[in-house]
Length: 236
Image 1 (spheres, rainbow, N blue to C red):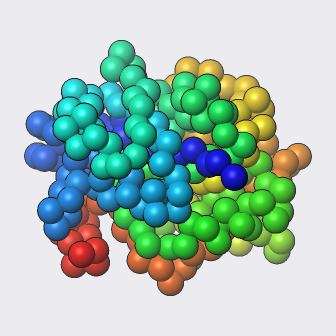
Image 2: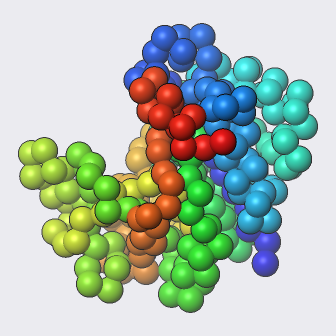
């Protein structure tokens, strides 16, 4: 079964200054490899070698790195958001023509590193006939997704002020990785710049959106210099 991938690399990376004053966050280096390379290779390890990368902040540097390294062995195309960064939802929707060429796709943030078993997440996604499967863990986070006892998405919560969208349930932190069914794209009603989380919350009442808990695997976002330094201790 063919599965396509997307790496969301358009963000400004403001928490990773001063590096992101001159470079895109996706080209931050962990032990000699950029996080972009590591994530392209992670997807390729599960047979996902047709990948689209969205770009905005220092887009030319990402395009140059992909060209110089021949996509690190994968077939990589660009979704150009140079005019306006579209956030996660808008970026995914813009890339829909590429992603819908496969029955399923994996979309991930460029600024995370993990070693969880993606194949198991895909298998759960297929077994439950989900339109979206969201990778989550039990880690503490200021904003968490809410799931029912069957592991279906029911809401979202801000743990700081207690604000809830949808229903309260079992809290899990979203890892920025999702497996999507082709039919998901036709159900997106928002346009322009928007968060994909808003789409999940709008759809979860009537659609199969599940969490995949990968607690216990290695996982880190490299959004700050401290976390980038910690990533070098976690990933060879």
